[in-house]
Image 1 (cartoon, rainbow, N blue to C red):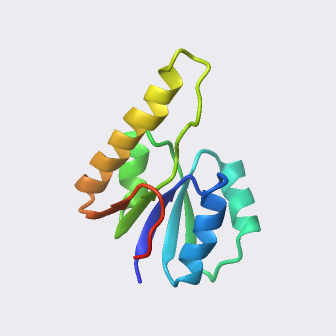
Image 2: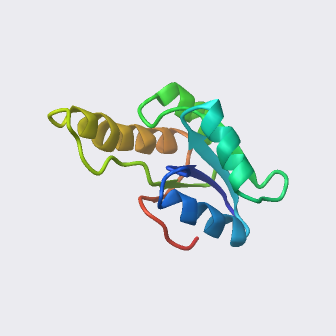
Image 3: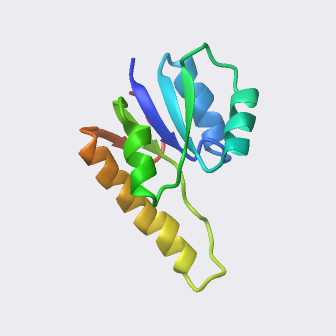
Length: 121
């Protein structure tokens, strides 16, 4: 099974995708924005030891992504803002630049399987 790097694990879609990945036998490294979110995620999701790890970072912070993606085989990218009240600046920063940064980090890590959404591995 694969080690999957998952963004958006604490969001609505991610809260359903994460258990599905674990149930399918994958190990997951979940990117979260804070220690508090990591603690809450680990408390909420029942996982075998070593099957779920969290890494603190952001989709547009390349340094945090490079370290977090080490050892992963695939990326499932779920982070996106559905709307913006900042004249598009937040949408650009998260949805466009964040996604481009995730893709670049995945390429640098040698990850060739990239899903924006969820599919079966």
